[in-house]
Length: 74
Image 1 (cartoon, one colour):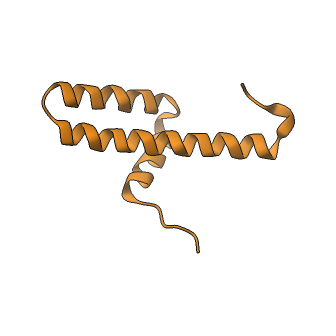
Image 2: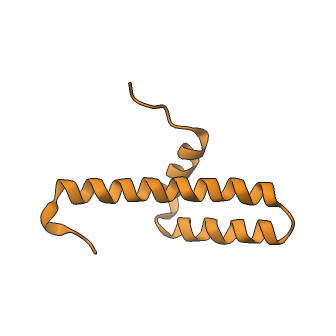
Image 3: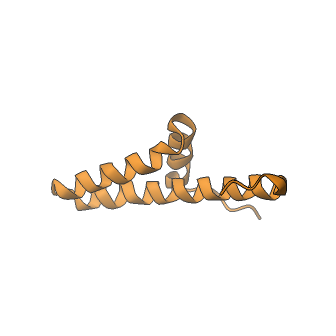
């Protein structure tokens, strides 16, 4: 059975599709700002989306490397 994506995963994928890898860094910056301004729960939610985006990005990178082993990008 294929696991269903969570709302967090869907948000992360939409943000990645729209903004690319830079979105991961931007989400982390926004989470830090939310925490700094007294919104720890919002910060935690934003970090969860950032983590999901990073995991999706790394899965995609791994899939590309597996599909084309001669073109490892490191």
